[in-house]
Length: 123
Image (cartoon, rainbow, N blue to C red; front, side, top):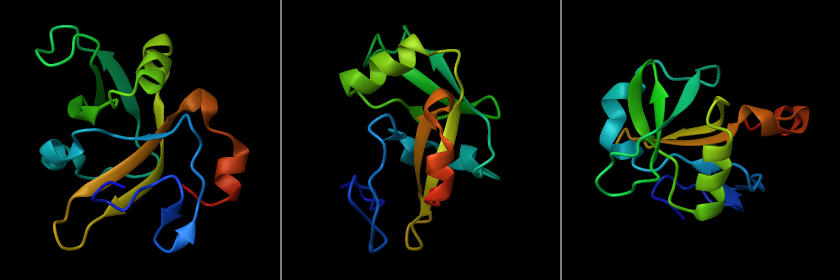
């Protein structure tokens, strides 16, 4: 479980199974200033960052042309995003910690965003 309370099982006291294609944006705590006005309708894009000194396969996530984090290092998620680099991300869950005022954001590629996700109220 992350510090934001996201987990593929328990969230705010309600059991929600998130799709395996969804993920929490990694490193988002370093980019909190770039999250102003982010919401469920925000357009998030993926950008390859081969010059990243920590990960040559890094995939950056941008909101309003500013970095807000990265695709996690999980090989399934990273490969899925690299293969669909021109596909935007859809926000399916936002949690803001009241104490730290930090955001935790769960996203999914547009191509995996289904009406079923809307029905269970994740957005």
